[in-house]
Image: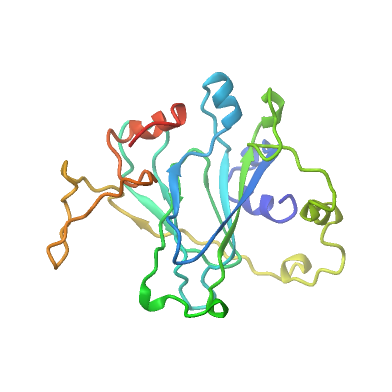
Length: 260
């Protein structure tokens, strides 16, 4: 994070803002391609401080490193795209635009840490379903980092293992990944990035406007060529269909049982 991702993240900030970064919270997501429901729309926040003081805070930058399961070369991966809305918890109007990031292996996306974001579903279809376990596509593997300008653990009254901003597990045989982190990459790494030969290209994400579409009370705004109406899913709430927007998203921070 310090040697590779932090320098890239600072490109999206002023020099003064970049120098204020003093910590990073990181986690991973691992999802099957063409067989997952995406990730609900949410804000990155200090969940411990939110629970303790009902204070809504954000990292200065959020980021996604696409490691596996994304597009390679000119082939387009069916993995779900990350979507980022021009909308914060304090917004009085819904976002007018949304940026989309189609997963591509070995790419790194950054965006302001107070923006609403999530991952689109990628259900696939029967025609493209693998016929055997040998044909299974790579899972969508991403590494997320939130860059903070304050030491988040300092105000945590209950810092739990495997919880938000939790400490690393002990470096034992049960946690070999912790041992690997402690060992480091070593001096024998031959990647272009470590040798300074990599050409890193920055580009703006495509945007879509409008970001939201109004439905009637029965959800019958869109009808396909066969006359079938849109059926709003009820079993799992990913906040793709909401009421009382944009306030419902801030309400979700305060009330985890909020129904949309």
